[in-house]
Length: 364
View 1 (cartoon, rainbow, N blue to C red):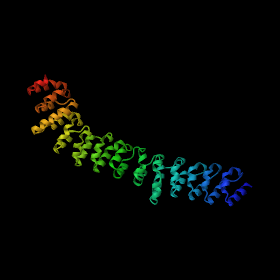
View 2 (cartoon, rainbow, N blue to C red):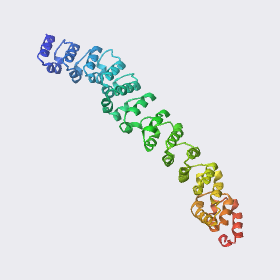
View 3 (spheres, rainbow, N blue to C red):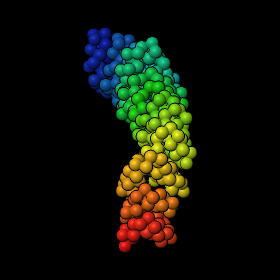
View 4 (tube, helix red, strand yellow):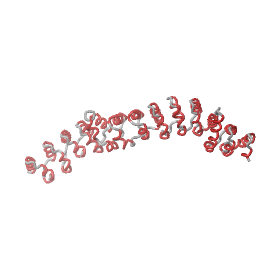
């Protein structure tokens, strides 16, 4: 009788031989063999010869989990009959074997990945070594459709450097996640990962960072905040009492309005208006006029010359009043050299003004 022989060999501690040659034991119930292996704490052998075992049921699965051999169940879920995959996953996690769930997550059908992650992290409160020993960079890409609560727990409880390599795989994260990361990460780190958030929230994220006192860094990386209104951002920074940040970084902004220009002049940052092309197109001439409006004659001439040499060549459709101001500041040559910066219909009037200033040689 093969069943009697198998049991006898087990009693003689020759269970390895039985398992290795199980197909030779005709008529032996493999479920019986599985239970005998679990009885002697050798349940893991079932996994090594899983193809030989048939009709494994839920009772064997839960016995293996209880014996800390849950890896066999997770790796070979399809071999066990009538198993509720969610219950098995939760049982593995509760017994400290959540790693097996993550290792073989694709075997678990119709389980809630968010709940899986939250339960593993909750277990880690009592066993922090267990939680931090998991290979998060490997496991996170397997977890799909995580809800905000699960992501909150993840970034609050796991060191960011462990999840950073795969954090870019997330998309359209809620603004509440950014609120946590603003406090947890350096500003540069957060900006590096802006792409995981919804673009409609970029402005709010920028504002959070400004409130944190990181206006300089926000402005330095302003083009990472795609779609953010630069003018509104400049006003927020100014209202925060950091007009100097805007003044020192005007070249990073686009489409600033006249009120920004006026505030910068009022606060003593007239020099920042020397980049009129970073203001709204229809006010650039007004910005230039404010920039050139310096009472000290010696400084006025120096500013006008620098402007006509370095800034004017890159401008278009500048108002004729700017040309007149430059001519009055002894920069007629600069105006003529950059005549294309002014509207074509104004060229004749500009030439007349140059001649009237006794600088006819420049016209010739």
